[in-house]
Image (cartoon, rainbow, N blue to C red; front, side, top):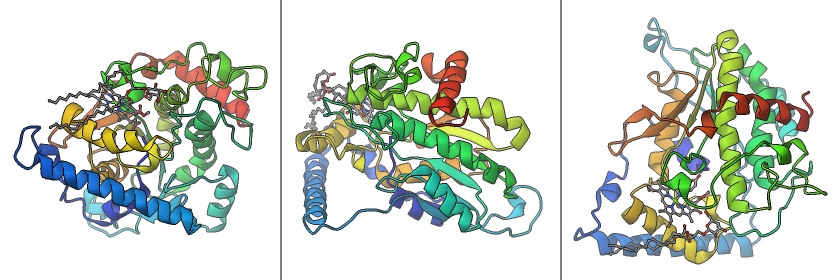
Length: 349
Ligand code: LMG
Ligand code: PMR
């Protein structure tokens, strides 16, 4: 579940009022406007493909990388009294391409900006890969990026969050329905399963051992779903370890199925054209990028969403609610072990 940062940027700068494309969501499968809508969807897909191809062929580099943006200025009235505070600084990973974590932290610190909210959003999904690939550190790419990269980044930046004087400091790690086997979507094969973490414990490096957390054969789609379970477990473990001491709000979310983002860039074209339609008209889980951006912006800045340790989702009327995680994604002992093994792997223990 990776949100395009662009949609977030526009969302946080607006005042949170929704102009969402509810018309799309409300299109009935048998409604008169459906075929036009499908045509429009296909046209926009083909335009997007052409744009991506143009960027590739002209050699243009898409390196928006991690962005630092700001929330609207917060007035104290929301919290206690009427006094305008400075704008909050929000770091969002995964605008469109990768980074190296420690270097980012160095650069960010050099900028001497306070850190008020950190959003771990970046994600890699390799559903078509039949062989694992590895990060520079030698970790399987999906778990290395989606989980270990964010784990390291959050651990390094927790002190910056702690030191911020912002009234509502938050650390947000984007989750996914596909990692939760208590849902229909989480039961589509391959299912997430961390097993006894034997693969993770042996380094996920694929050298004489498995590149998968559970020690099994490589499967790119499963690696993604496993990484999302780690994200949701990590958020809860942060909550248990740091909430009281720091007052930071730790949260995760499933903003809906954003079937048109770069998350699917490594999927075949046929899938990328049919999947949004499938989600829109059959599962009805589809959420446009702008709406997903608004939902993330709520978790970043809405004064009603300050509860910590929560996995937020939204219902059909776009109202947020505290969602129930699957048994594995809420397993306290597993969360502790994922934390400890990850600490060793990234060199923090
Ligand atoms: C696995 O494949 C890979 O093996 C694995 O490597 C990894 O990539 C993994 O999770 C990733 O996927 C999964 C594969 C089999 O699933 C699919 O490929 C399904 C993709 C979903 C896209 C389906 C497009 C359907 C097109 C619908 C377009 C609708 C347009 C609107 C309609 C308007 C009508 C006026 O997954 C499985 O789990 C097996 C199940 C296979 C069933 C697939 C059936 C698709 C279901 C929907 C089609 C139903 C159509 C009926 C429409 C009725 C309308 C009244
Ligand atoms: Mg899934 C209510 C049903 C629902 C929802 C909300 C999703 C979300 N999906 C649902 C159902 C189904 N999906 C069904 C019935 C199928 C079988 C046809 C199905 C298939 C499917 C595939 C092949 N779905 C997928 C894929 C992907 O490749 C996506 C994935 O797993 O990425 C890791 C995916 C997703 N479905 C979702 C969501 C949100 C995704 C994207 C994952 C993410 O954003 O984290």
